[in-house]
Length: 477
Image 1: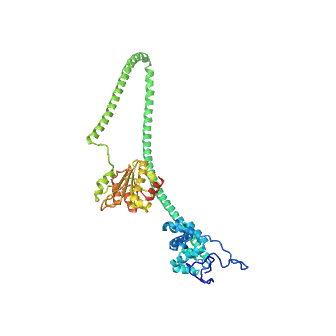
Image 2: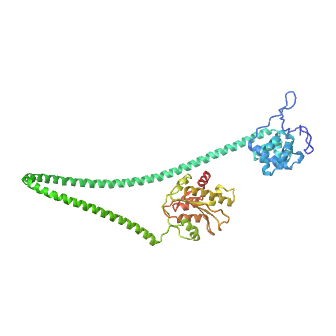
Protein backbone atom coordinates (compact mmCIF):
# COMPACT_ATOMS: atom_id res chain seq x y z
CA UNK A 1 0.00 0.00 0.00
CA UNK A 2 1.68 3.27 -1.09
CA UNK A 3 1.98 5.70 1.80
CA UNK A 4 3.53 9.10 2.11
CA UNK A 5 3.69 8.82 5.92
CA UNK A 6 6.75 7.61 7.90
CA UNK A 7 7.28 3.88 8.29
CA UNK A 8 5.51 2.34 11.25
CA UNK A 9 6.38 -1.21 12.32
CA UNK A 10 2.86 -1.69 13.72
CA UNK A 11 1.25 -1.43 10.24
CA UNK A 12 0.90 -4.40 7.88
CA UNK A 13 3.28 -4.16 4.92
CA UNK A 14 1.81 -4.28 1.42
CA UNK A 15 3.08 -4.03 -2.15
CA UNK A 16 3.93 -0.49 -3.24
CA UNK A 17 1.93 -0.87 -6.46
CA UNK A 18 -1.82 -0.39 -6.33
CA UNK A 19 -3.72 -3.17 -8.08
CA UNK A 20 -7.39 -3.90 -8.68
CA UNK A 21 -9.33 -4.25 -5.41
CA UNK A 22 -6.44 -2.90 -3.27
CA UNK A 23 -6.83 0.06 -0.95
CA UNK A 24 -5.28 3.08 -2.67
CA UNK A 25 -3.78 6.14 -1.19
CA UNK A 26 -6.43 7.71 1.09
CA UNK A 27 -6.12 11.22 -0.24
CA UNK A 28 -4.91 10.76 -3.86
CA UNK A 29 -7.30 9.94 -6.72
CA UNK A 30 -6.19 7.86 -9.70
CA UNK A 31 -7.03 10.79 -12.03
CA UNK A 32 -5.49 13.49 -9.86
CA UNK A 33 -1.94 13.42 -11.38
CA UNK A 34 -0.94 16.44 -13.42
CA UNK A 35 -0.54 16.22 -17.21
CA UNK A 36 3.27 16.50 -17.03
CA UNK A 37 3.66 13.65 -14.54
CA UNK A 38 4.26 16.05 -11.62
CA UNK A 39 3.13 15.69 -8.05
CA UNK A 40 -0.38 14.16 -7.68
CA UNK A 41 -3.09 16.62 -6.66
CA UNK A 42 -4.84 15.89 -3.34
CA UNK A 43 -8.63 15.98 -3.64
CA UNK A 44 -10.57 17.76 -0.86
CA UNK A 45 -12.41 15.74 1.72
CA UNK A 46 -15.98 14.93 0.60
CA UNK A 47 -19.01 16.36 2.39
CA UNK A 48 -20.33 13.51 4.49
CA UNK A 49 -23.99 12.99 5.37
CA UNK A 50 -24.52 13.46 9.09
CA UNK A 51 -25.41 9.77 9.79
CA UNK A 52 -22.23 8.65 7.95
CA UNK A 53 -20.09 11.11 9.88
CA UNK A 54 -21.55 9.93 13.19
CA UNK A 55 -20.95 6.28 12.24
CA UNK A 56 -17.29 6.98 11.28
CA UNK A 57 -16.72 8.70 14.63
CA UNK A 58 -18.43 5.83 16.50
CA UNK A 59 -16.29 3.18 14.75
CA UNK A 60 -13.09 5.13 15.47
CA UNK A 61 -14.09 5.78 19.10
CA UNK A 62 -14.76 2.06 19.58
CA UNK A 63 -11.26 0.96 18.45
CA UNK A 64 -9.39 3.97 19.89
CA UNK A 65 -8.65 2.38 23.34
CA UNK A 66 -7.39 -0.81 21.60
CA UNK A 67 -4.58 1.05 19.79
CA UNK A 68 -1.13 1.16 21.43
CA UNK A 69 -0.48 4.41 23.21
CA UNK A 70 2.30 5.46 20.80
CA UNK A 71 -0.06 4.97 17.81
CA UNK A 72 -2.73 7.28 19.26
CA UNK A 73 -2.23 10.90 18.11
CA UNK A 74 -1.54 13.37 20.89
CA UNK A 75 -4.87 15.27 20.45
CA UNK A 76 -6.80 12.01 20.94
CA UNK A 77 -4.95 10.50 23.89
CA UNK A 78 -7.16 12.31 26.37
CA UNK A 79 -10.29 11.31 24.37
CA UNK A 80 -9.20 7.64 24.46
CA UNK A 81 -9.53 7.71 28.26
CA UNK A 82 -13.18 8.78 28.17
CA UNK A 83 -15.99 6.37 29.02
CA UNK A 84 -17.42 4.55 25.95
CA UNK A 85 -20.69 6.52 25.95
CA UNK A 86 -18.83 9.86 26.17
CA UNK A 87 -15.95 9.14 23.81
CA UNK A 88 -17.94 9.46 20.55
CA UNK A 89 -20.12 12.28 21.85
CA UNK A 90 -17.48 14.59 23.35
CA UNK A 91 -14.53 13.65 21.14
CA UNK A 92 -16.36 13.72 17.79
CA UNK A 93 -14.79 17.00 16.49
CA UNK A 94 -11.25 15.92 17.41
CA UNK A 95 -11.68 12.40 15.98
CA UNK A 96 -13.11 13.70 12.67
CA UNK A 97 -10.35 16.28 12.30
CA UNK A 98 -7.62 13.71 13.02
CA UNK A 99 -9.06 11.21 10.52
CA UNK A 100 -9.07 13.87 7.79
CA UNK A 101 -5.58 15.21 8.59
CA UNK A 102 -3.66 12.06 9.54
CA UNK A 103 -3.79 9.27 6.86
CA UNK A 104 -1.48 7.03 8.91
CA UNK A 105 -3.82 7.18 11.91
CA UNK A 106 -6.79 6.54 9.61
CA UNK A 107 -4.98 3.50 8.13
CA UNK A 108 -4.38 2.05 11.61
CA UNK A 109 -8.00 2.56 12.57
CA UNK A 110 -9.13 1.06 9.25
CA UNK A 111 -7.13 -2.13 9.81
CA UNK A 112 -8.98 -2.84 13.06
CA UNK A 113 -12.38 -1.72 11.82
CA UNK A 114 -12.18 -3.92 8.70
CA UNK A 115 -11.17 -6.88 10.85
CA UNK A 116 -14.29 -6.39 12.99
CA UNK A 117 -16.47 -5.84 9.89
CA UNK A 118 -15.70 -9.28 8.46
CA UNK A 119 -17.29 -10.06 5.07
CA UNK A 120 -18.75 -6.57 4.73
CA UNK A 121 -15.29 -5.05 5.16
CA UNK A 122 -13.86 -7.37 2.49
CA UNK A 123 -16.67 -6.41 0.10
CA UNK A 124 -16.02 -2.70 0.66
CA UNK A 125 -12.26 -3.21 -0.01
CA UNK A 126 -13.21 -4.74 -3.37
CA UNK A 127 -15.23 -1.62 -4.16
CA UNK A 128 -18.64 -3.35 -3.96
CA UNK A 129 -21.36 -3.54 -1.34
CA UNK A 130 -24.07 -6.18 -0.76
CA UNK A 131 -27.55 -5.00 -1.65
CA UNK A 132 -28.86 -5.80 1.84
CA UNK A 133 -26.05 -3.91 3.61
CA UNK A 134 -26.76 -0.71 5.55
CA UNK A 135 -25.71 2.16 3.21
CA UNK A 136 -24.51 4.21 6.19
CA UNK A 137 -22.25 1.36 7.36
CA UNK A 138 -20.90 0.84 3.82
CA UNK A 139 -20.17 4.56 3.41
CA UNK A 140 -18.39 4.71 6.79
CA UNK A 141 -16.14 1.73 5.92
CA UNK A 142 -15.50 3.17 2.44
CA UNK A 143 -14.42 6.51 3.93
CA UNK A 144 -11.96 4.79 6.27
CA UNK A 145 -10.60 2.19 3.76
CA UNK A 146 -10.89 4.42 0.65
CA UNK A 147 -10.91 1.73 -2.05
CA UNK A 148 -11.48 2.45 -5.73
CA UNK A 149 -14.79 4.29 -6.14
CA UNK A 150 -15.13 5.13 -2.42
CA UNK A 151 -16.54 8.57 -3.14
CA UNK A 152 -19.35 7.02 -5.20
CA UNK A 153 -20.21 4.76 -2.22
CA UNK A 154 -20.46 7.82 0.04
CA UNK A 155 -22.63 9.63 -2.52
CA UNK A 156 -24.89 6.57 -2.75
CA UNK A 157 -25.21 6.53 1.07
CA UNK A 158 -26.16 10.20 1.07
CA UNK A 159 -28.84 9.51 -1.52
CA UNK A 160 -30.18 6.60 0.58
CA UNK A 161 -30.27 8.75 3.74
CA UNK A 162 -32.12 11.49 1.90
CA UNK A 163 -34.55 8.92 0.51
CA UNK A 164 -35.24 7.66 4.05
CA UNK A 165 -35.77 11.25 5.23
CA UNK A 166 -38.19 11.84 2.34
CA UNK A 167 -40.02 8.62 3.24
CA UNK A 168 -40.31 9.78 6.84
CA UNK A 169 -41.73 13.13 5.67
CA UNK A 170 -44.26 11.33 3.44
CA UNK A 171 -45.25 9.05 6.34
CA UNK A 172 -45.73 12.09 8.58
CA UNK A 173 -47.90 13.76 5.93
CA UNK A 174 -49.99 10.59 5.63
CA UNK A 175 -50.39 10.46 9.43
CA UNK A 176 -51.48 14.11 9.53
CA UNK A 177 -53.97 13.48 6.73
CA UNK A 178 -55.41 10.52 8.66
CA UNK A 179 -55.69 12.68 11.77
CA UNK A 180 -57.49 15.40 9.83
CA UNK A 181 -59.85 12.78 8.39
CA UNK A 182 -60.54 11.50 11.92
CA UNK A 183 -61.27 15.02 13.15
CA UNK A 184 -63.53 15.64 10.15
CA UNK A 185 -65.45 12.43 10.92
CA UNK A 186 -65.81 13.53 14.52
CA UNK A 187 -67.06 16.96 13.41
CA UNK A 188 -69.61 15.26 11.16
CA UNK A 189 -70.79 13.14 14.08
CA UNK A 190 -71.12 16.23 16.26
CA UNK A 191 -73.02 17.97 13.44
CA UNK A 192 -75.40 15.01 13.19
CA UNK A 193 -76.03 15.18 16.95
CA UNK A 194 -76.66 18.92 16.73
CA UNK A 195 -79.02 18.34 13.79
CA UNK A 196 -80.98 15.82 15.87
CA UNK A 197 -81.20 18.36 18.67
CA UNK A 198 -82.42 21.03 16.23
CA UNK A 199 -85.05 18.63 14.86
CA UNK A 200 -86.25 17.93 18.39
CA UNK A 201 -86.35 21.65 19.07
CA UNK A 202 -88.31 22.22 15.85
CA UNK A 203 -90.85 19.59 16.90
CA UNK A 204 -91.21 21.26 20.29
CA UNK A 205 -91.67 24.70 18.66
CA UNK A 206 -94.29 23.29 16.30
CA UNK A 207 -96.15 21.81 19.22
CA UNK A 208 -96.04 25.13 21.06
CA UNK A 209 -97.24 26.87 17.88
CA UNK A 210 -100.23 24.52 17.74
CA UNK A 211 -101.04 25.36 21.35
CA UNK A 212 -100.77 29.09 20.60
CA UNK A 213 -103.12 28.70 17.63
CA UNK A 214 -105.65 26.92 19.82
CA UNK A 215 -105.39 29.70 22.41
CA UNK A 216 -105.83 32.28 19.61
CA UNK A 217 -109.05 30.57 18.47
CA UNK A 218 -110.36 30.60 22.02
CA UNK A 219 -109.50 34.29 22.40
CA UNK A 220 -111.27 35.09 19.10
CA UNK A 221 -114.38 33.26 20.31
CA UNK A 222 -114.24 35.18 23.58
CA UNK A 223 -113.85 38.45 21.66
CA UNK A 224 -116.97 37.72 19.57
CA UNK A 225 -118.97 36.99 22.70
CA UNK A 226 -117.71 40.21 24.26
CA UNK A 227 -118.71 42.20 21.17
CA UNK A 228 -122.20 40.67 21.29
CA UNK A 229 -122.54 41.67 24.93
CA UNK A 230 -121.32 45.14 24.01
CA UNK A 231 -124.08 45.49 21.37
CA UNK A 232 -126.67 44.45 23.91
CA UNK A 233 -125.26 46.96 26.34
CA UNK A 234 -125.47 49.68 23.68
CA UNK A 235 -129.15 48.90 23.09
CA UNK A 236 -129.83 49.00 26.79
CA UNK A 237 -127.97 52.31 26.99
CA UNK A 238 -130.25 53.83 24.35
CA UNK A 239 -133.26 52.62 26.29
CA UNK A 240 -131.90 54.10 29.46
CA UNK A 241 -131.26 57.41 27.75
CA UNK A 242 -134.93 57.59 26.84
CA UNK A 243 -135.89 56.83 30.35
CA UNK A 244 -133.43 59.45 31.57
CA UNK A 245 -135.02 62.04 29.33
CA UNK A 246 -138.39 61.20 30.72
CA UNK A 247 -137.05 61.31 34.26
CA UNK A 248 -135.22 64.63 33.82
CA UNK A 249 -137.93 66.33 35.81
CA UNK A 250 -137.01 64.26 38.80
CA UNK A 251 -133.25 64.88 38.37
CA UNK A 252 -133.02 68.09 40.35
CA UNK A 253 -134.68 66.64 43.40
CA UNK A 254 -132.75 63.44 43.07
CA UNK A 255 -129.53 65.45 42.61
CA UNK A 256 -129.97 67.14 45.92
CA UNK A 257 -130.54 63.79 47.55
CA UNK A 258 -127.53 62.41 45.68
CA UNK A 259 -125.28 65.22 46.94
CA UNK A 260 -126.27 64.40 50.43
CA UNK A 261 -125.56 60.71 49.83
CA UNK A 262 -122.21 61.72 48.20
CA UNK A 263 -121.10 63.44 51.35
CA UNK A 264 -122.01 60.35 53.28
CA UNK A 265 -120.15 58.19 50.70
CA UNK A 266 -116.99 60.31 50.96
CA UNK A 267 -117.02 59.88 54.69
CA UNK A 268 -117.53 56.13 54.24
CA UNK A 269 -114.68 56.08 51.64
CA UNK A 270 -112.30 57.67 54.15
CA UNK A 271 -113.18 55.01 56.65
CA UNK A 272 -112.73 52.31 53.93
CA UNK A 273 -109.27 53.66 53.01
CA UNK A 274 -108.18 53.50 56.60
CA UNK A 275 -109.53 49.98 56.86
CA UNK A 276 -107.71 48.95 53.63
CA UNK A 277 -104.42 50.35 54.95
CA UNK A 278 -104.87 48.42 58.16
CA UNK A 279 -105.73 45.25 56.15
CA UNK A 280 -102.51 45.69 54.08
CA UNK A 281 -100.47 45.91 57.26
CA UNK A 282 -102.13 42.71 58.47
CA UNK A 283 -101.31 40.95 55.17
CA UNK A 284 -97.66 42.05 55.38
CA UNK A 285 -97.43 40.75 58.93
CA UNK A 286 -98.96 37.41 57.86
CA UNK A 287 -96.47 37.10 54.93
CA UNK A 288 -93.49 37.83 57.17
CA UNK A 289 -94.75 35.36 59.74
CA UNK A 290 -95.20 32.69 57.01
CA UNK A 291 -91.63 33.17 55.68
CA UNK A 292 -90.23 33.13 59.20
CA UNK A 293 -92.15 29.91 59.92
CA UNK A 294 -90.79 28.27 56.72
CA UNK A 295 -87.19 29.24 57.61
CA UNK A 296 -87.52 27.95 61.17
CA UNK A 297 -89.13 24.76 59.84
CA UNK A 298 -86.15 24.19 57.49
CA UNK A 299 -83.73 24.71 60.40
CA UNK A 300 -85.76 22.38 62.55
CA UNK A 301 -85.90 19.74 59.81
CA UNK A 302 -82.10 19.89 59.38
CA UNK A 303 -81.74 19.55 63.16
CA UNK A 304 -84.33 16.72 63.24
CA UNK A 305 -82.49 14.79 60.48
CA UNK A 306 -79.08 15.58 62.03
CA UNK A 307 -77.69 16.73 58.67
CA UNK A 308 -74.22 18.06 59.47
CA UNK A 309 -71.89 19.50 56.79
CA UNK A 310 -70.28 16.60 54.93
CA UNK A 311 -66.52 16.05 55.16
CA UNK A 312 -66.37 13.21 52.59
CA UNK A 313 -67.08 12.99 48.86
CA UNK A 314 -68.46 9.93 46.99
CA UNK A 315 -64.98 8.91 45.84
CA UNK A 316 -63.82 8.73 49.47
CA UNK A 317 -66.46 6.10 50.20
CA UNK A 318 -65.28 4.09 47.18
CA UNK A 319 -61.70 4.28 48.42
CA UNK A 320 -62.64 3.26 52.00
CA UNK A 321 -65.42 0.71 51.57
CA UNK A 322 -66.77 0.15 48.06
CA UNK A 323 -63.40 -1.04 46.71
CA UNK A 324 -63.59 -3.92 49.20
CA UNK A 325 -66.78 -5.22 47.49
CA UNK A 326 -65.85 -6.24 43.92
CA UNK A 327 -69.26 -7.84 43.39
CA UNK A 328 -71.35 -4.78 44.30
CA UNK A 329 -74.25 -4.09 41.94
CA UNK A 330 -73.49 -1.26 39.50
CA UNK A 331 -75.53 1.91 39.69
CA UNK A 332 -77.78 2.93 36.83
CA UNK A 333 -76.23 5.04 34.10
CA UNK A 334 -76.31 8.74 34.88
CA UNK A 335 -77.94 11.18 32.50
CA UNK A 336 -74.80 13.15 31.70
CA UNK A 337 -73.48 14.55 28.43
CA UNK A 338 -71.58 12.11 26.26
CA UNK A 339 -67.84 12.10 25.55
CA UNK A 340 -65.80 13.66 22.76
CA UNK A 341 -62.48 12.54 21.33
CA UNK A 342 -61.18 16.12 21.05
CA UNK A 343 -58.30 16.55 23.58
CA UNK A 344 -58.82 20.32 23.56
CA UNK A 345 -62.05 19.81 25.54
CA UNK A 346 -60.17 18.93 28.75
CA UNK A 347 -59.99 22.58 29.85
CA UNK A 348 -63.67 23.09 29.00
CA UNK A 349 -64.72 20.05 31.03
CA UNK A 350 -62.56 21.06 34.02
CA UNK A 351 -64.27 24.48 33.96
CA UNK A 352 -67.67 22.85 34.71
CA UNK A 353 -68.91 23.36 38.32
CA UNK A 354 -67.78 20.68 40.80
CA UNK A 355 -66.07 18.58 38.11
CA UNK A 356 -64.31 15.36 39.17
CA UNK A 357 -61.13 14.37 37.24
CA UNK A 358 -60.30 10.62 37.42
CA UNK A 359 -56.90 9.59 35.96
CA UNK A 360 -55.73 6.08 34.96
CA UNK A 361 -52.26 6.54 36.49
CA UNK A 362 -49.94 4.06 34.78
CA UNK A 363 -51.79 4.40 31.47
CA UNK A 364 -50.80 8.09 31.41
CA UNK A 365 -47.28 7.82 32.89
CA UNK A 366 -46.13 4.95 30.66
CA UNK A 367 -47.30 6.91 27.65
CA UNK A 368 -45.68 10.20 28.70
CA UNK A 369 -42.72 9.28 30.99
CA UNK A 370 -42.05 5.64 30.09
CA UNK A 371 -38.29 6.08 30.37
CA UNK A 372 -38.53 6.82 34.13
CA UNK A 373 -38.89 4.36 36.99
CA UNK A 374 -42.39 3.67 38.33
CA UNK A 375 -41.69 5.72 41.45
CA UNK A 376 -40.56 8.72 39.40
CA UNK A 377 -43.58 8.31 37.08
CA UNK A 378 -45.99 8.38 40.02
CA UNK A 379 -44.26 11.36 41.63
CA UNK A 380 -44.25 13.41 38.42
CA UNK A 381 -47.92 12.69 37.63
CA UNK A 382 -49.13 13.41 41.19
CA UNK A 383 -47.19 16.69 41.29
CA UNK A 384 -48.66 17.81 37.95
CA UNK A 385 -52.21 16.91 39.06
CA UNK A 386 -51.66 18.98 42.20
CA UNK A 387 -51.09 22.02 39.98
CA UNK A 388 -54.33 21.33 38.07
CA UNK A 389 -56.28 20.93 41.32
CA UNK A 390 -54.87 24.24 42.61
CA UNK A 391 -55.72 26.08 39.38
CA UNK A 392 -59.26 24.73 38.87
CA UNK A 393 -60.38 23.85 42.41
CA UNK A 394 -61.78 20.57 41.06
CA UNK A 395 -61.67 17.17 42.77
CA UNK A 396 -58.85 15.02 41.33
CA UNK A 397 -58.41 11.24 41.81
CA UNK A 398 -55.50 9.22 40.36
CA UNK A 399 -55.70 5.41 40.37
CA UNK A 400 -52.71 3.02 40.12
CA UNK A 401 -52.56 -0.76 39.83
CA UNK A 402 -51.12 -2.44 42.90
CA UNK A 403 -52.21 -5.17 45.32
CA UNK A 404 -50.44 -3.41 48.19
CA UNK A 405 -50.24 0.32 48.81
CA UNK A 406 -46.83 1.65 47.79
CA UNK A 407 -44.58 2.90 50.59
CA UNK A 408 -42.40 5.98 50.37
CA UNK A 409 -44.90 8.01 48.35
CA UNK A 410 -44.66 11.81 48.78
CA UNK A 411 -47.64 13.45 50.48
CA UNK A 412 -50.44 14.00 47.97
CA UNK A 413 -50.99 17.67 47.06
CA UNK A 414 -54.10 19.40 48.32
CA UNK A 415 -57.14 18.39 46.30
CA UNK A 416 -55.54 15.18 44.87
CA UNK A 417 -56.64 11.70 46.00
CA UNK A 418 -54.23 8.77 45.30
CA UNK A 419 -55.78 5.26 45.17
CA UNK A 420 -54.25 1.82 44.57
CA UNK A 421 -56.34 -1.16 43.48
CA UNK A 422 -56.54 -4.01 45.95
CA UNK A 423 -55.60 -7.63 45.48
CA UNK A 424 -57.76 -9.33 42.85
CA UNK A 425 -58.87 -6.00 41.39
CA UNK A 426 -57.51 -3.83 38.58
CA UNK A 427 -57.29 -0.06 38.32
CA UNK A 428 -59.84 -0.18 35.46
CA UNK A 429 -62.46 -1.76 37.74
CA UNK A 430 -61.77 0.78 40.49
CA UNK A 431 -62.17 3.66 37.99
CA UNK A 432 -65.56 2.32 36.87
CA UNK A 433 -66.67 2.10 40.50
CA UNK A 434 -65.61 5.68 41.13
CA UNK A 435 -67.74 6.81 38.17
CA UNK A 436 -70.77 4.79 39.31
CA UNK A 437 -70.51 6.25 42.83
CA UNK A 438 -70.98 9.83 41.59
CA UNK A 439 -74.49 11.36 41.70
CA UNK A 440 -76.41 11.94 38.50
CA UNK A 441 -75.67 15.30 36.89
CA UNK A 442 -72.15 15.76 38.22
CA UNK A 443 -69.49 16.14 35.46
CA UNK A 444 -66.91 13.32 35.71
CA UNK A 445 -63.87 13.34 33.37
CA UNK A 446 -61.89 10.06 32.98
CA UNK A 447 -58.43 10.26 31.37
CA UNK A 448 -57.29 6.94 29.87
CA UNK A 449 -56.22 5.70 26.44
CA UNK A 450 -57.58 2.21 27.29
CA UNK A 451 -60.58 1.66 24.99
CA UNK A 452 -62.30 -0.70 27.47
CA UNK A 453 -62.06 1.92 30.23
CA UNK A 454 -63.43 4.62 27.91
CA UNK A 455 -66.37 2.45 26.79
CA UNK A 456 -67.13 1.41 30.37
CA UNK A 457 -67.25 4.92 31.85
CA UNK A 458 -69.10 6.30 28.83
CA UNK A 459 -72.02 3.96 29.58
CA UNK A 460 -72.32 5.62 33.00
CA UNK A 461 -72.34 9.16 31.60
CA UNK A 462 -68.70 10.19 32.17
CA UNK A 463 -66.51 12.09 29.71
CA UNK A 464 -63.62 9.82 28.54
CA UNK A 465 -60.52 11.59 27.15
CA UNK A 466 -57.20 10.24 25.86
CA UNK A 467 -53.96 10.37 27.88
CA UNK A 468 -52.38 12.77 25.35
CA UNK A 469 -54.81 15.56 26.30
CA UNK A 470 -53.70 15.42 29.97
CA UNK A 471 -50.00 15.13 29.02
CA UNK A 472 -50.26 18.26 26.88
CA UNK A 473 -52.12 20.04 29.70
CA UNK A 474 -49.34 19.11 32.15
CA UNK A 475 -46.66 20.24 29.69
CA UNK A 476 -48.41 23.59 29.28
CA UNK A 477 -48.47 24.03 33.06
